[in-house]
Length: 115
Image 1 (cartoon, one colour):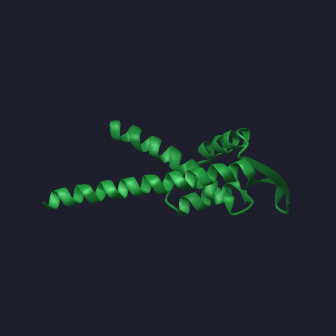
Image 2: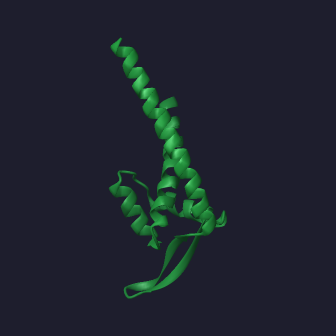
Image 3: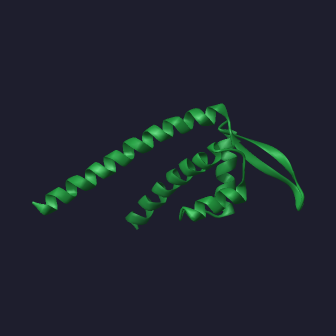
């Protein structure tokens, strides 16, 4: 139970960071975001993604454009705002710090077991 709670919290932060990274490359449709997350082995359903996109939009990190579709109704394509780009830079820095901390901790643990 404790591991599951920790895993859930870790996934929430990683998913948000990955969504911002994906959108930072240019306008993207929500189902394409899900496809990219799935390809990265982060399984996310629409019921998780849409509330996240709404929260990011309400916080001023995302905007969107409506684009006409030849196969149905217009589609909403998401883009990062300037505030979103600034937050992503901060998250990039945090990610590198955390990755370093984890790698260093793993290396230290491995060295102790070898001694």
